[in-house]
Length: 486
Figure 1 (tube, helix red, strand yellow):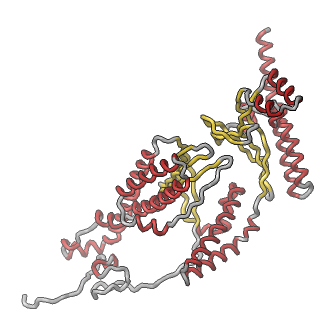
Figure 2 (tube, rainbow, N blue to C red):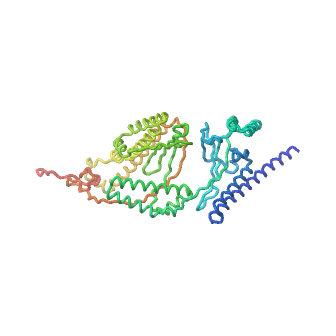
């Protein structure tokens, strides 16, 4: 009999869960229906908001939300029933009755699900954690008495004495999309091209600033569109540039590092590495995530002059300078000097890019390691070498050695950075990056081919005769004299 009762109870629980799930799906379908009605013009935005509010209340009721005073409080397990496992986490939570955010000790899950993604709007269902005070029945009665007596300040203070707990709110968020047609892509590209041509003809400061400003504006417009249409990003890029402008698709390894935590902000460093790119690179950037009344510092930075400081530096210098800058940034943040920390971060970014160039510019090193002593060859050996495309094979070996050296340099740098940030809390991720490149303006300069026996720099590359790579495998140099008395 007991087994039968237990079985019946389990059956009822399972049936109940299935029934609730079906009702939730039905509610989501209603949201989709009303969103489509809005896009076709059958209802206005105010009506859509009313339907979304109704759906919000229904979902709260189905999931068993408590305390409607806070918009319906749900637990983590209840959210998982409809949105599954969380893909995001946060340490920042909204504090009810205090109108501010506060940082908690451990990460909490955050949910976001796209319910509708149309041409005009997208609707997402959010579930974010918040802090609230749970008050006992007796305490509530005491608060009510104080409020009836007009002692509102005392009532508010009493509310703060309850037990702090974490809850979740379900909310619908509507984003109005920016149409790709409104971007006027063709016109924007023509504007950039026109400004680039003006700068090419007259490289003045004013023309450079105009080009930079308009480029940033267009970039922001594209970013807004791509963020709203991330699922169709690749198709849009193909339509915008054409598949012939696809350069490479490579994997990007990222580390998001919690560098420093202030009272109302976090300093985040993102370390990115591209091991699959033809030109291996590492990026290191810091930014602030502010909360409440946090104000971003305004920083002016002269990148061109900083670049010159890092010319012709070796890897040991880059390692030492990077470690110094990281330490200096940390000290500035601890002292509350956010502007100095950001300047040092920008300097670090320039240094990292200079190190990228140093690590990839290994042609001369590869040539030194892979070379042939043609002077020691006999005429027959040299003839055989040229006959078998020896110079072509030598060049191929140098290319392979270059890739090998670049890979070694990247691995050394990777180990250095991971060691540098070993004591910090970080999250690791991996993503594929597709890169398109379309040149809007390019200028060609025709150089003569190097003549290997006239003691002149014919192709104007700073190398004369035998020193020029074009003369490899050729007889070069000027005949000074011939001894006829043999």
